[in-house]
Image (cartoon, rainbow, N blue to C red):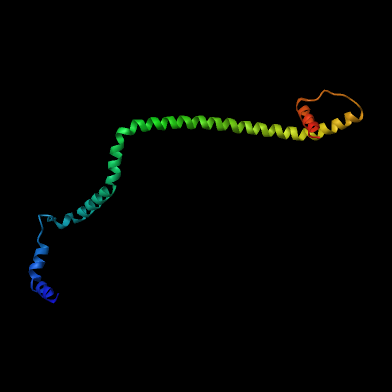
Length: 141
């Protein structure tokens, strides 16, 4: 190892010259005025190389663009239908809630009226929504 280091120290000058000399014309002499432009150009080149795979993927997908647009159109149409159905269901639920509140508020009045009618032996035809309740309560007993 010592011998190798001594040889490197002896050939220090020739090694330095070899390192400064361009290999296969890899470096180009650029005037100092253009150095900042070269730095910007290298930044752009690095960014392009980083995004190269994404750009290539985009180019590969161009032939499939029409099929993808058709699929998206179909999906959008289905979504429109689902939105419409959901809106209708929401309206129906709100109507049902309103009806349930009305029925709930009427039940005490109806029960009070039935008690009054039973006490005085008055026969009244049952209302459509109370007859089912009455049958269910009779069957439940």
